[in-house]
Length: 443
Image (cartoon, rainbow, N blue to C red; front, side, top):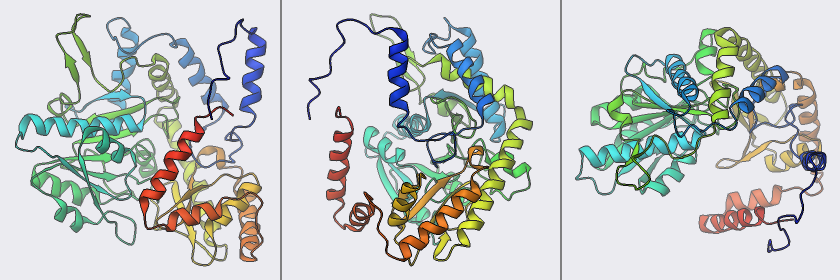
């Protein structure tokens, strides 16, 4: 499908027409305010949403590219980084940067490990990083972008990284080892202490991907939940990523990448001293950095404070526990592993979970499909606290419908089942490429 039919209007629309068109388009989007979706948006209520909107728009035009031009953004960023480091066991030497999201933070961690090896271990010409199969796909993207070979290790039956496999995977080319806190697919924390000890023993960097848990795990620990050690208090941990726009409840476009010290972070920076446009230095991937995202992160962290985050953490965990208990009580369903916080997956040995997802779609709920093994994924936020009973009731009826082999109109179960079972993954890759290409076409 071509896009030649869409052109810049010859004359502009008035303000109200533009906004009306946008509201009309938005009406078909996922209903995240009412808790009908289980990913992508971390909604903590209208009061917080209004605050970050105001903070964002106040600094909408400012550009984080130049802290000399906008010292306010420098203040906001350094304070967000410092507060995040304090939450995650950092000390006086801990440093970091704000990025546009978890993917960019992960890209920076991998790029830093590669470039540090280039500087200190020039004999490595084909760098490798050790990653559990459950780490975020952004590590695969980083491997692709930066020509770092991903060495994938399996997980144990509890879905946590296999420590002995991690040890066995270390080679003379290893520059980085990675663990998750928690891993997105099943919500479990890898054995960070044991893995980081191996990395320290072998003299390689160790990154903790806490994009999902960095702003929740410290608070649920204070609430009395058992949280394995995962941060800079663990010897051997050299970098951590944590997303402020997830459970930090900031506006989209706000993550933090932290390093144990400046000597490591220097390898993150890009500098070019010979540009006719002036001396050029950039701390992260992007040049222009939206000032609004930085300002909104600072605003919400100061607004909530420890007390506010603790209150939200309690709501989240109470809700997640009710949901997991309710799902476990439905015949044929079970939770995968033992999730450490508010993100989990459930599967079945008797039901087609993709057909179950279709049946829930028909009831207005949107669950994420996962594979290897087939399961459905849920990410719980405060927005879900009022819909537990309604969700479990619909899930109970949908499970009975699937058990009785009653089909759902327009479902995707057959496609997911087929793609998940194909042994030739190149075919699946081609399907995804074709799907992405179609997504960018004008309807």
